[in-house]
Image (tube, rainbow, N blue to C red; front, side):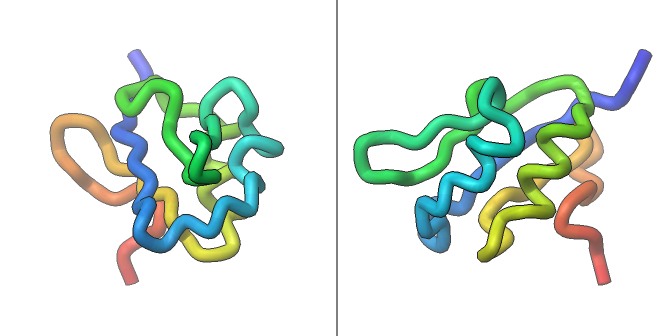
Length: 77
């Protein structure tokens, strides 16, 4: 069984660039205020979601391992 992730978007820093919806259109959507939301906050590990997080110009997308809370992105420094 693969990893499960918790996906969150910090809407206080999201600028609505829509890069996440371009990288993973089935995993993120923008609301009427142009703020990103994950379609499913708890999900199987997915390369498209990781690419969306890495491509966010303000690093508003956080991914952690479900259960342990260990960071997937952004990585701990």
